[in-house]
Length: 306
Length: 306
Figure 1 (cartoon, each protein chain N blue to C red):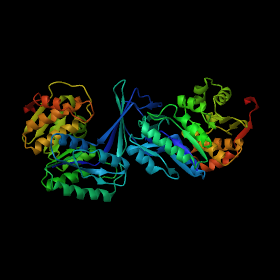
Figure 2 (cartoon, rainbow over the protein chains, first blue to last red; figure 1 turned 180 degrees about the vertical axis):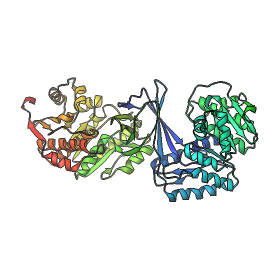
Figure 3 (cartoon, rainbow over the protein chains, first blue to last red; figure 1 turned 90 degrees about the horizontal axis):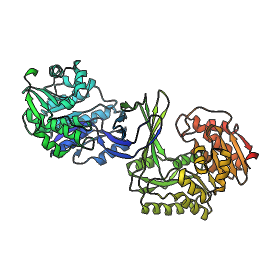
Figure 4 (tube, each protein chain N blue to C red; figure 1 turned 45 degrees about the vertical axis):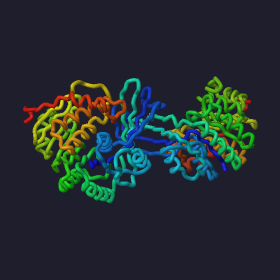
């Protein structure tokens, strides 16, 4: 099975309102909710691709119970905590289409809970073919958490992908994960340069075996021990980019587990990412668009990146 | 016991954010939540005043479970429904102090559920000394719902207070409740006049035995079969008016059950209302402020209102 880790799981709630006006009262016309946090999103896409998936991380309180009740298609190995799983609220203004986001901070994790998680994680890794470490850290988890989790995976020879940002990414990269998948902003923050080519190379020097930068509508830029590639979408597509990065992670990880060569992994990741932007529901992907796009993504070896 | 009815119960969530900016992402710095809906608020204040309280209405889904788990000090006779209890989100901008409100619509109530509620209600009324009918109607409940509930209470000779707005208030008033407690805006909408004195008299002619209008910082204006009074606060107080009207209802209803004369009921209602504005937590009341204010509220017979 593939393991995904979401230390800061969430209940993602979407509200539609005719027009958001600060300091007034709004009647919400439509409410949708689903389990969230990057690792759970990655797990959902992996399951839709036919992989066996186990999800772990922290969950607690009434919101945590709701998240667990709504998990489908994956094995739930979430570790219960005393605090309450966070809600995220996306308020969509149906007049402008713009979204205002309100994110709760998440539960404070105690040292005992962190240690219980590490035991569960190590146990689960023993039957995992790969692991994805995804998203932000809840309060209380040490900033070097991902570095520790990367080292544990490497010790057990389980390929590990890291998708986070800021200081947890900086420390995690130094622990030598197999793949990191930053977006342009995360990559610039890590490396201090806004040139994706230079930044990708720099991130490898910091310890990542392979770096796949997701550049939004410009596709993916990959710097790996086997070569350097760009995966370029055939066109720009309108839609909601929420979850597109998580779908790319699922594409990379499923390709790795299936033993696909890098160009095929990248085509899959880019096609899933675009098919997610195109889907009417945020974070889902449009399967028929995915299948068509898979044949349309241009993956080119990038000599200049060497 | 005193019975309170909340057909549209809620989980009231308060978010504090440094500054609310539409179309951007916000990290919520503080999250608080508590059971809401006017009848539950009234019940909480009645219980704090030492009364035995039973709360009924509808509850459903994961949010409904959370509401029930957090109810304390009152007997829970809420009727389960298939749909999900609504959340209300108050986003407090800590820079300006302003609040932006997002209210979910509430569960769609089926005819079977509405009929199950009416049976429960009639059963509970048989041991009730008074009943308060409070707040908005969830989708699916007939607009004449409060009129029906008022008639049932009158048939069983249980004093009934109605606190709602719009068409449900208009129809409910016609069923001859013992007390209605509109605020200035609700009263103007019901009667078509913004003159509180005229409007209060008009509301009685529409069927209410007694009308107590809550006029915010101007206190209460009462028009009853026993006389006409104004309850005037000694001064304006700063604070959050959320729940002040519900505290006034609790004051009126507890005074009625205790057989207090109208001037004492009005002093209590006005003092509780002010003490709620003064409390640091929305919807709670400051007990020592309440006890002091009780001696400071001026209740004067209003000859002009006759």
